[in-house]
Image (cartoon, rainbow, N blue to C red; front, side, top):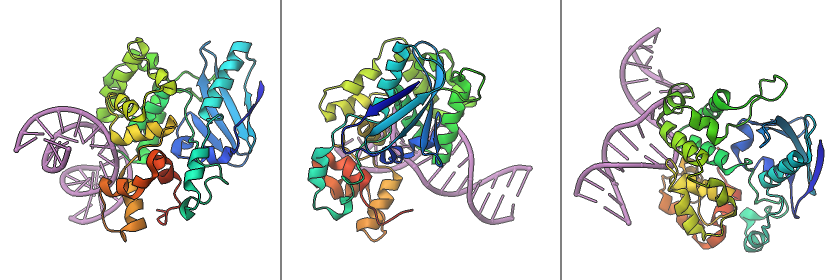
Amino acid sequence: MQLTLPARSPFSFMSVVNSHGWLQLAPFEFDEVASVLHYTDRLASGHVLEYRVSGDSQGVQVTATGRLNKAEQREVADKVAWMFGLDMDFSGFYAASRGEPKLAKARRLAHGRVLRSPTLFEDVIKTILTTNTLWSATKRMTGNLIRQYGAALDGGSEKRAFPGPASIAAGTPDVLRDTVRVGYRASAIHDLARRVASGEYDLESLKTSTLPTLELRQELMKIKGVGPYAAANLLLILGRSDFIPIDSWALKLVSHEWYDGQPVTAREVEKAFESWGQYKGLAYWFWDWEYKG
DNA sequence: GGTAGACCTGGACGC
DNA sequence: GCGTCCAGGTCTACC
């Protein structure tokens, strides 16, 4: 199967791919030589396949393994369009950042979109797995979760899809803790999977929520394991940038940018971007920082 | 509303 | 090889 999906201009395939660390988390896999993003997914039909997505400034091209019927092709197209935010409009952010040298490249590089998973469920779980741990552990926990509960790619490959809520809910918090090694996060992950799988909680509806950002943030923070940092990260994924995902890295960046390397608090990070209003998160995310790590 | 301490893992370090 | 310390956000209890 091959699809060509156009994007709203300006668009940059590589800007989306490199927008954050998601490309390093399974079931994403990035072929740097060919500049192709691979993603293993289980469709509603139960068919497990791998999409390969390449792109340019016009949009993306998708190829998928095997034969897909019309409904499956539509599902893949809808999911890839969401993952790359093909229809998103950042003209307001570009207008606001005009005249700011630290964001001078934002429009030219088509900054704004962040790579998303096909489901908000996957992005919430992955975000919880980034909290209170090192990036190497996030990668390991994600890989373990997929090995434990993900459906294998058709044809006997070792590749697996990210597990849906029902698969995780069918397991136990003990397995999450002891085998997947997510530690104390086990109950939060299992609880979310159980509530989504049973239909008690319609998490995916938040993708199209019209709630004001403050209320949407409160909604996200009702999820166990989602605090201010995780909520701000998820809001960025949902296209809302009124909040900054303040983690230890953010403190380091702001410290070196404006405080000569002296320790700063979350309050200082907020203060630094206060004037950016609804574009705070984007200004922070795509700022041309002095400190490179 | 603000703060201290527990939660859990794995890597770094000293012995 | 073993023990100890530390980094990393969220949650809860307490003031």
